[in-house]
Image (cartoon, rainbow, N blue to C red):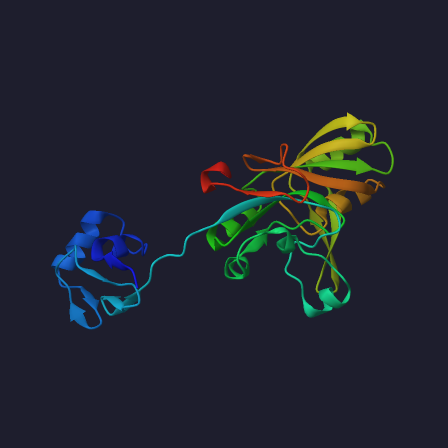
Length: 243
C-alpha cells in the first residue's frame, strides 16, 4: 500500500487549522500511529495504519465531488427504490458514468419533480447540501410556462409573498412564501427567482392566483447556470463556482 508522510496525512484530516498547529501536536507527543508516539513530521507509513490524536482516531477527509446535470423530464432526482424499479421509473443517477462506489456516495441537492427539468447539483458534500437548501441563502431561477396569461397584479402578489397550502405528513397547513422576483417573458411565460425551495412551491404559488404550471425548467442555482449543457449531460464543477 502506498505510504504517506505524517504531516501530509494530518493536513488532510481537517483537524488542524494550520501546518504550525499540526507540527505543535507532533512536538507535544500527541500523535500516535498503532499506539506508538511519532515525533518526526516526515515519518512515512501505510495509510491503513491507525492514527490517534489525543486518543481520537483520525481519518483523511473524503474528497468532495461536485457535478451539475441538466435533468430531463421523466427522471427522478433520487436513487431508485425497489418500487420505483417495478414501476419502470428512471433516475438521474443512471446518467452518471462514474464508478458504483462513487455513485453510492452521491446525492442530489434541491428537488426537481419528475415532470420538471433543468439544473441539478449532485455531490457528496453534506455541508454544502445543507447550505444550498437553507431558506434565504441561495437564489434559484426557473423558467415557467403557465396554462394562461398572468397579470401584473398577480405577479405583484406573488413577488411580495403569497399564502399557499402545504401538505406534510398528511396535514395541510398555510405558509407565506418569501419575497421573490418575476420577469414576464410572454403572456404565459415567466422567469422566477426564489431563495427557498418548498415542495412544489412554484406550482402552489401559481395555483394561489388561479393559474397552473404547464412546464418548469430550473436555469440557475447560485452562480451556476445551466447554459448550453444539453439535457441528460453533466459536468464537474468546483465548489467556488456555486457560491
